[in-house]
Structures are given as structure tokens and as C-alpha cells.
Length: 276
Ligand code: SF4
Ligand code: SF4
Ligand code: SF4
Image (tube, rainbow, N blue to C red; front, side, top):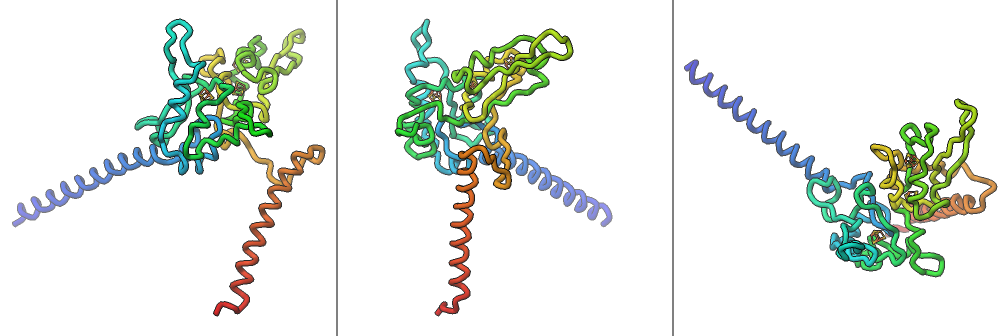
């Protein structure tokens, strides 16, 4: 009798452990799966991409942008005449990005900021919006792109050590606009000048050419998506000297008022007693 009950207990423990093991394995597989399907905050999208959450719902994963990027005229190898690797990749399993969506990695292939931006007009879903890369006359202007923002890590940038380096500055297609060089006296030596690369937020398109050109072992300048790299001062702080900044706060107030009005009208409706 005793042996029988031990056997039963052993069987029960084995079955329980098996099912716990399977659940854990299932959990691991599921977390791997959700990792691939949820939005990654560090992904860089093509020029003209709408906000990441909207992009994820709008993109139909057709790959036309990546195909246009691959086949762009400027992508031909001068020696062989064959197309080189394109900037845009379509995410696949293991890339830790939503599978089937386009992205790029600057250190592998940056965006070359093609003047005709062939990747954008081919998008059939609106996930890449031509208006976001057009000037006030509605003409395509790649300088309006905002794929991300380059950030300099001062501790590893050798220019901040006092060593002369301007590789990122020279690689930038918006030379002198997106990156400027600021001169500072080197107090330590008393006779040298620091020449520091400074990224200007309103001009940098996030193309990543600087990141690819950086001379350090791991780039001291790198592009991060706007949501990650940029702070937000909030509407309590206004640059009184800058009319554009007034507009920013004005727009936020207008949105707030519209929301208030619409919520007032719904509460008026609920309190009016005219429900029947
Ligand atoms: S603009 Fe950039 S992403 Fe678009 S086709 Fe040119 S290199 Fe590719
Ligand atoms: S990402 Fe770098 S290279 Fe591209 S515009 Fe910005 S600063 Fe210039
Ligand atoms: S290329 Fe790299 S190390 Fe050189 S100045 Fe630019 S960020 Fe600094």
C-alpha cells in the first residue's frame, strides 16, 4: 500500500514538474514572440515615417520602401555597376523589431539622404508620409526628414579629450548645420583648443552618416529615435524671445481647449435631463 502511494506521489510530482517546465518554456517562447511583435523603442525608421505607434499600425509590410532604397540610382557600385546593400532592411525573426517592418542600422548602412527620396512616395499605406519630407511648396526635401537625432557621448569622443578629430563633422551631409564645431580653450594645457562637435537638434535628420564615420571603437556619436533622444520642457516653460516657441504652446493650448469643449459638451448632454 505504502509503495503504491509513493509511486502515485512520484507520478504526481513528475507530471507537475513537466507541466511547470512546459509552462516555463511556453512563457519563454511567448516572451520571445512578443519581443518581436511589440514596438522596440530603439528602432530607426525610414525618412517620412509617421509616429512609431501609428507607423506600426499603418505599415502593411509590403517592402516597397526597402526595394526602392536597394534599387536607387545612387546605390550602384562604381566598380562592378551592381547595386550595393540597401539602407533599409525588413525586420525578420531574431531582429527584435516588429517582423516585416523597415528599419536601418547606421553603422551597417546609413541613410544617404537621396534628394529624390525614392523610398517614400512608393509607400502605399501612408506609414511613410511625403508631407513630412516636403518643403512649404510641397516639393520633396530630404533635409526635412527626422529619422532620429545624433547624440555625442562626451566621455568617449576624443575631441573632448583634446585630440583633433572632425570625422563626424565632415561626414555630415548637412555640414555646418547639423554638426558645428565649437572652440573652447583647453585650461589643462593652457595653450591648446578643444574643437568640439555639437549636434543641432533642428537640423539633424538622423541619417547616421556621422555614426558610421566616427573613429572610435564603438561610435561616440550615435543616432537615437526622437522619442528616446529628446526631452520635453513642457508648456510651463516658454522662450519669450522666440515666436516659434509661442506657437508651440499656442498649439498645445488649442488642443487642450478643444478637448475641454468636447468633454464639456458630453457632460452637458449627460446632465441636461433630456435623455429621453
Ligand atoms: S533616402 Fe535613405 S532610406 Fe530612402 S532610399 Fe535614400 S538611402 Fe534609402
Ligand atoms: S545624423 Fe549625423 S550626419 Fe546625419 S544629419 Fe545628423 S549630425 Fe549630420
Ligand atoms: S568622429 Fe567620433 S570621436 Fe571624432 S569628433 Fe566625431 S564623435 Fe568625436
